[in-house]
Picture 1 (cartoon, rainbow, N blue to C red):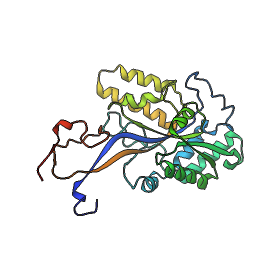
Picture 2: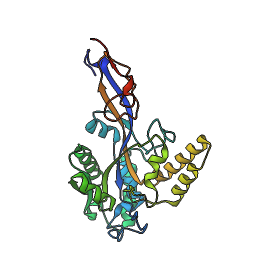
Picture 3: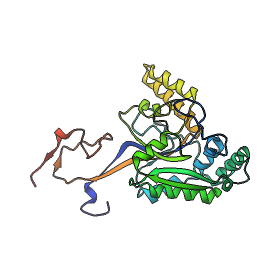
Length: 283
């Protein structure tokens, strides 16, 4: 971008995808009962809201973006992506705040019944290898170890294996992400309904589900958007998972490429939604 020739040829555009990490909230998405492995809070400390808030507030997302993403992308504090109705730009219930994080952790540990975070043993922290997630996982693990003395077992596996383990709730924390199938809040927020097949956060809230159902029937788009925002705020007031970053894609396009229409829905190449407009000019 600093190069005098290549810099003017750079194209950057926000993409309809987000990176987030699941906290295991303990609800089996198939039976809607507590997961068998979560016999109590010691077995699954992420079932405790203060514990989840503490983990959230201990993460400096700006520093993480600089380390893992070359400073690119928009910080995410919720799930609906920029450019989609229901995006809640200014909502951030649990910003980076180590002092507040430690207060919530102290409260959580008292409820769990242990003297310190180290007494919980190593939390299972799952991710898929080969997807460049190791830096983010290491950053998060170190942030929690430094802030609380919390240890994690970082479990990397092939994506097919990881995906099966994730949806079974076999991790305490795990990597996740979502790319919009279509630009509507229902496509994002519908992931986290009670019993949702992709609800790896193992989270269930009937009020949340009710707002989504109401929004789906609302003909007034302004009112529907507000309902989606209300639902999203229920999820993030509960610190159900840890949103990190909305995507940003960077390309270089030569000046002799004409008719390039770049959209947030582009997938493989810039302008791939409108290939028919692209021309290569004489050069």
